Length: 456
Image (cartoon, helix red, strand yellow):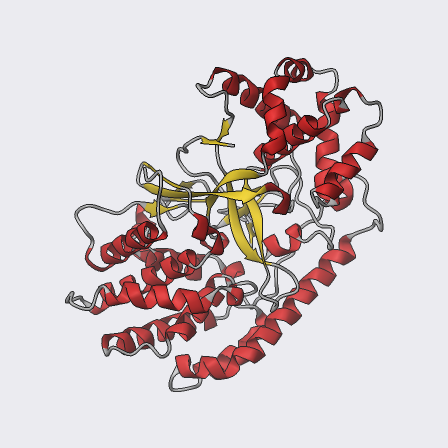
């Protein structure tokens, strides 16, 4: 592990993966989660590896996505604009000229999806979890369209030729196309100026290595994925890098008060986690509480185009709720004995700028705790609980949402695989004003194999 990592360490590891994509090193690099081995919670098949390439490289994963996941395709509203790009002699140059028009189409489609989901709602006020539960809707596509594959193949060919000639004037356009294809409604909000610097640096590391054109293109694609990940603002405060299996898991600490909720917790699960936290803390050397890091991603907030990004919980809602409940009890030790703790809970949420979904989630856990054995445990461990007054951050694994093929649990599966949630759903379900929420375990991202418990 790297216990005091620098950002340069992350950059070096990214270059390691780019070089591996170029020449298939004898010592393979660790992979970022979730780019290791699996899709929909199971291993890629041998047929997938032979058909699409190395499924732990971005080239293989892009080939798989564009061939098998039509719902991740280009929105139908954008296709006329993409036609303009494809009809030009240079798609990278044409891309710059249509970008504003494309952003307008994206914004219009986002608004359409929001309207459709709002029309599902039959309530005008929100007081319980069920009032928030919403079935996600996808953006509109043309499933027969080949635009995504054509745009990808042509842009990749053009950038590989240009880079081989030492030209990088269209690097930003290529990264924008790459991000757009992975996440059509949110990808164009990525931090491209920063990503270009990383991309050029990593690709330059290949300058003296003679490569077959196909391997060169694979390295360029890997560099694009790595550059967009490294541009995530959360990584500026990297705290620890854990290596497990052949995974690289970068951990940071994120502010609890700045985490919105997209999904509700199951109170019984939260109570069990509280019991584990207090019991393990009692027996730790320093009487400190350590937990498995949650997973978070930085995703564009609404409205689009404002440069606002929100840190959203991808996995770990129960751990986040358990930590917040212990903060609440530390600040108000008598709350479990109160017949009606609503005023205290409302004040706590107002002080910490927590939205209504947080309040409802916390209230349900308090109800489950009352008269439970865990309530007695909390009283006997109050010397540990009091320390939670000073807990304002939680350890988190940093991931990028568009790298996932996320399973949707609310909608019926397709014949051979789950229905997908799309990356842009994070913006909808984490926006407090829209009033949407997933039910408990409504989204399945999968989990990294192994973790390092990190102290609160």
